[in-house]
Length: 124
Figure (cartoon, rainbow, N blue to C red):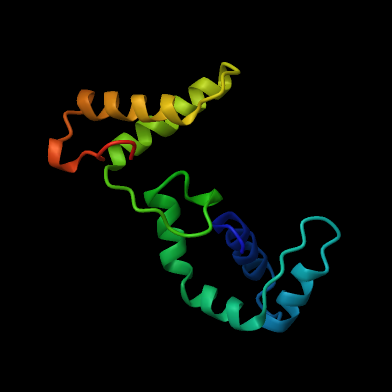
């Protein structure tokens, strides 16, 4: 299964080579020496139809590029705060684990005054 980032690469290639057939595009990506992407023409056709929706996912969710399927984000403000916090921690050379992320999510929900009924329950 390809990630959203992989499909964005395919879309960029298609934009740069508008006269290639879908089958030629499939063959091109399968033949790459490093980082070959394996998919068939039927999948490519479906993903081209879904392109606007997939590109919207990137705008709505900054962590979407690494995902293989769309994630539901219940609170975009908390999601953005977590992404920035994780980046800050990584820049400092620190590793973020699950319990740290859960605790930070709870703190951001409180700081951003997210209504109790909209907060993720438990370990989220």
